[in-house]
Length: 457
Image (cartoon, rainbow, N blue to C red):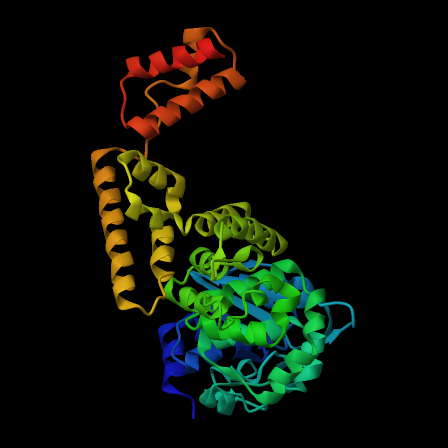
């Protein structure tokens, strides 16, 4: 019996039946497969629909173009074409079997006329279920429906062969733990442990993309645990394993690894916030010290930002993502100095330095409070409440989105008959400092300061 949730997906998206119809009328087989079937059964919304067919990529292109669909040929070399319908993406792949070389993640594509062989090559049984829309029939040769009902991750063929062939599947298993709450069975998890070295042949970009999906899932701490306990993290992010700093009986401190998992769970499910949380204490192992019987991690936020930069570059994150995440790591302790008293100048500087990451930074600071001491918890949150109130007050009082001095670089060049260069830059830096420290200043006061700097230079 086809679950009503999957039937609803077809009813809500009538173009899926239209596609099935024009394939059938042309004499081809067509099946909905993969995530669309899996998530349809689980009643999880999707805008991506994958199909498999006995039509070639060229034949599929002709069919879609004849029926008014926009298409792309990005994956044509692998037997896949993409068709677009409003905000939906359809990927249609010719029945195939994959053959992998020992030292490569790139498969040799072998065409197949057999649906069962096509399903056998897929990563997990839960993704190896096909649905014939027109016949209203589920095809499940590898027990995917049973595994789906039990929340189990297994592979259609031997897990060791599957992971050795395509090592990225090991990381995908960890991702499904996070995104869907599934659990690999013992054989599958053992196969991951035995094949961790194979992950080294996978490109950094593909690893990054899977880690991103893992981290923004609903159960990120479970996915991270599997990532670490399987041994995959040693090959991808060994710095994470180093957070398991031994907590000795004489010098108490938080279990940094367990603390990190809690913080990751508490922040918003976007990759910047989640990576900021994952890496916020990454500098602690290198900064651990003991003084007067107490453990300390001095400047771990600065060291952590440097380590984070290295990790994120290694994983090919964009410059903007690296900049934002490292800002969170480097500044996550800064709000705690508010209890010592911040002037308006300090508030302005915090707002400006945080930039568009202000809300994410404040959220991380709150998430980082994992103390079980209620009085201490309440005390920290109270001064953070006061800090955010001061931020709102200063924002209301001043236009902080425009913290430019009342004179521009062009003005400086005209006043002092200068050409663009270091002298203009130094004067403008002093004017920005004046604006931050004193708030809004008149043009006359700004020019006076500029004249003073110019004379010194």
